Length: 433
Image (cartoon, rainbow, N blue to C red; front, side):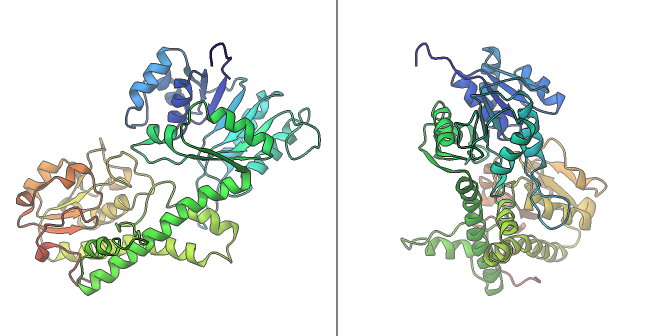
């Protein structure tokens, strides 16, 4: 709107979600300060460069930095809108307990500079009740301000929860176009957050309360985890029965009310592999299905390892190529990746016979140190390796023609080569499991 004063925005956390969110907000014309604890990240962004690869992100960040709309710092400053996008990992207790300490640390920082009229929006995937806990902490630190849900008077600040819904590789597009659930501590808080998001979100923004929005985010990823667990369990059954699981799923999905997802070597990423445990933690006695789905998907990694080992041992001395380390196709994100887990186990067992093909890696992760495994490209793998284990469906793998795979032993955990001769495909053979 012409003549309108744009709010000053502070995005806390400049990782996989925080940086593109800050850039999208800046593109909408709002001055943005990105706050991060890592000086290298701050320096990189202030040069107009990026520390995390994402489609079109480099040009966007460079443009908004050059226009003076985005800058980064390790020191928080006053703002009108604070968006918290920090990690929520597991605690190191071995029980998949959510660790919201980063959220609370961010809330402490924000509380230092908070003033009447500000809004604080949590975007980090969080257990139900985290937004209220964040509010309570800030209220304790700032008794001079009135917080929503704690007073009958008009609160001084607004508190809301608004999770992202994005796929790596399409983050910028989906941040702008996907629908949003906007959960306020009160309806007034939700309306204030709604007005902010409509500045840069073209998708529908649906208001609700904070707890419902927190649960919605967890449910979305738990649903996908359960669906993938069904597909992965089907793939194990198909292995035993000598069936092509991808054909079975393709045919079943022709039913108008069936939509089975695709199996793979497990489930990875910092969302689907993590978020279901937040629901289990909140209701441990009432979540047997969600807990079981997590177990099925984790067990699929070991099933794949067993099949891969059987195939390799059937070809003594052959060189082995593990294709892919990322948790999904065409990205450089290896967090919670089943492909990375499987490849590392194979490398530790078979040493120098193993080569890793990952076009989105400049070097192998630390767990491959001292295994003897090397990082090579797909062309070298096809020339030198006789056993191919497909762990990620990168496009560069999909386009390898049958002529270049002829005569090789193949274990295709992603179903990217349906034309591979049956006798050379591990899935469908009755290997040890």
